[in-house]
View 1 (cartoon, helix red, strand yellow):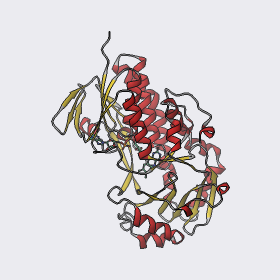
View 2 (view 1 turned 135 degrees about the horizontal axis):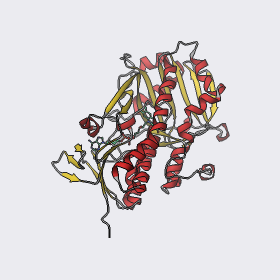
View 3 (view 1 turned 90 degrees about the vertical axis):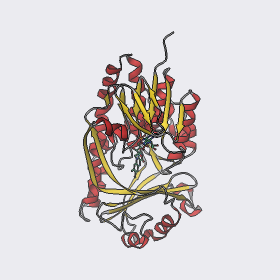
View 4 (view 1 turned 135 degrees about the vertical axis):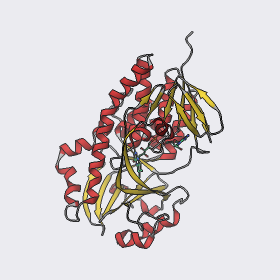
Length: 390
Ligand SMILES: Cc1cc2nc3c(=O)[nH]c(=O)nc-3n(C[C@H](O)[C@H](O)[C@H](O)COP(=O)(O)OP(=O)(O)OC[C@H]3O[C@@H](n4cnc5c(N)ncnc54)[C@H](O)[C@@H]3O)c2cc1C
């Protein structure tokens, strides 16, 4: 009998866990190292678009994933005084689900197929020969190491693979607070909206994240010292968004400030996505600003796509080439268009509504923004019935 191939993965985020499940489903033994002491850290909301729905369906966990989230009916863009600029019916991204809920179901699914997940296990380094080094002094050998250790990846940095790292002028603070009955529409037929409020160079995006939580991102420029303070500077934000005063106060009072901090958005591109026995994926390889809500989507697509490519040929180098050639063009398309969407924030006041409306007026533009959301990920089938499951 052939010996099973073995993978060591750094990072139990979206990319690491989906890659772990994909490989274990295809006969590999897999160990995942997560430096945090719990998988429950970091609560925030993720927009679930159709490509992610296909992945959860392929992994057999779509129903429990959707059961923990909420369906959004509209995406409203409003100005600083709360006046509606644009209302779009939620299309491909109509679910909001908490990161904690998704991660816990992915981890459960991984463990059911034999993946070993070690929390409190900090990876310090890895080399292309297939050795991974831990902070506790242990070294493990693998047929493949996956660096899915996020935007500040240590493995990526010790391999010198970064081609470019472009900072947006903007960044944001993500927060989650308990919701109140008044956050839901009194009449359910009015529908639930995700609201994106624009004021000069600041933005507040908020919506329910589940039946019991609201999620928000407060974004501002890197040189806006009052805007990037955490806990948020209530009087400064109230000045920018007078009609949102009660909500701003609630976020300031109830967010978990040990978890939330302002972070500058950036786009990372690598010279290549692998080196010897190491593959790099997710934010570690292709971080992007969050405007199109596809960072986690690409991390998961590329995690699953990697396991499929490794199943197509036993030759590691060929499999890694097939994987990168197949997945990289769409990933870079999303990186490019998400940065373009992000430029709206820099426009003068009068031009902003025009840019926001352009998405509705120019279908070609909307189709560029939604290309990843409409993509059927490698290893998945088209799935049309999400309405029936909600
Ligand atoms: C404001 C904002 C809003 C966003 N909204 C969305 C959205 O709606 N939809 C969406 O798809 N994406 C969204 N994203 C992007 C998304 O959060 C990321 O793209 C996604 O989390 C990347 O997944 P990942 O698995 O690559 O990395 P991560 O989710 O960052 O996971 C990496 C894991 O590796 C662990 N780790 C790090 N270093 C080590 C180490 N040395 N050893 C062991 N473990 C380690 C970390 O603790 C972490 O658990 C948003 C991002 C931001 C900033």
